[in-house]
Image (tube, rainbow, N blue to C red; front, side, top):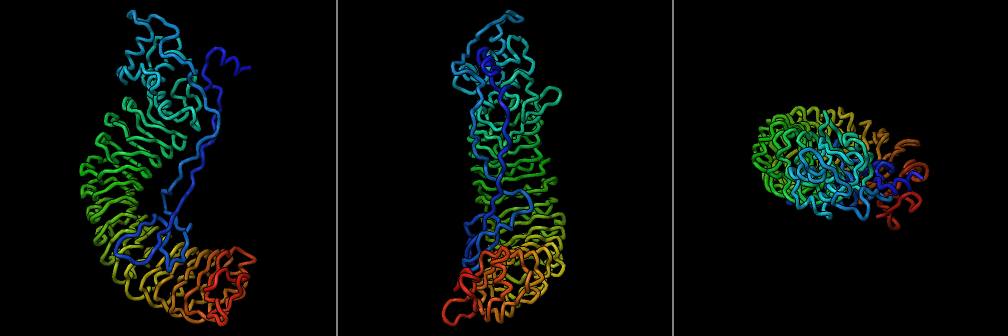
Length: 557
């Protein structure tokens, strides 16, 4: 009865339609793949290096922060109707306001300060739809000559129609008769719009230029939608501090000249934005967070970054950046540096080794050369260090043992020489260690498997020799162990004992020098626990390792 009555008197349905929950964002991690090369690989960021083509995607090596999200799936529901199918842009009812102006003329004169009249009077454009809504169908302004809040309400409704608001996930209040400061995703202070938060809300279309007139706007968050077009002119939004347009379909310059200088946070990761980073970046003196990964940005990192003394987080991964990393970054108190999957070359600047607050340091999949400085041991707050898939030479610094907060350590697919040092005794929080696809020799340190938090170890395709330490049985949280393509390994695979290694899901020991029989306690993990993949040299009539297929081993080589 209420719905029929609303339709009969022409009220919008926005007040009658409930909101659906946010679509959950999905984590995605990928893993680089390939043999040593003098060029960076083309694989995605995240994960660990592979050895011998047998190392699958590692879902255990997620970044410390800023996971990659998938855009939400389209909402499958009946859209709300803010305008009737036969809506009119000319006034259905008129009234005379002060100065002898008709109400629609007063509205038009006011809104011409924000949008061109040709757009306002075009019923097929978002601006025309917003104007028609305000003049004829908005219960809040119906019959009123007041223009207080009119421009802001018009801009919000233009955004609504420009981004297919009828299909948004959350739209409580929109198209209804309440003050727009109470609409879902809108924040106000003293009656002025200060925040737009429409993340993961199924927006599609373009951001209208009219947004420039929200003069008190401080925060613009449209993360994880399907927005098209370019970043609009925001240069007049002097109060704007935070922009989050990550995971959309935006194109055009990643750093348009029409951005305000007072930004503290600029996040555009996961679009198709291009261009270069301007040397005028040093005008953003308040900038604390810059996330611009997974775009098509080219050129170099300007030395002017060294003047951004408030910057704490810099993400430029998966772009087309090249050249050297400027040593001036060492002047900034950065906590996170993520530059993976570009074409950065030359040595890793030694100045970065003095960033004592650094927690995330990801340089994988570039063409860095030279050695890794022994000053790396000063980064005692580091939790995630990835330099894999580069051209780094020399020995692995023993000073890595001083990084006691490390959770992720990836050094594989480089040109290391010498032996793998025993650095693990005090790394009590380490979860992933990858030294695969290198010429590292020596033996497996016995302290490695004594790390209580260890989940993934990849030593495949290395020259490490000797036997697998008996301390393997102590790795109670170990999920994945890759010792494949290590021909210098000798002896039997030690038995962990019954009820040990119960978290293990993958164990690869094929193409090694290991002999004997697969321990029965490991075979028991196949039937009693979670071991899904077990591969060994068990093929033929006289295999190097005895292992029943398929009851125990899932693959024989």
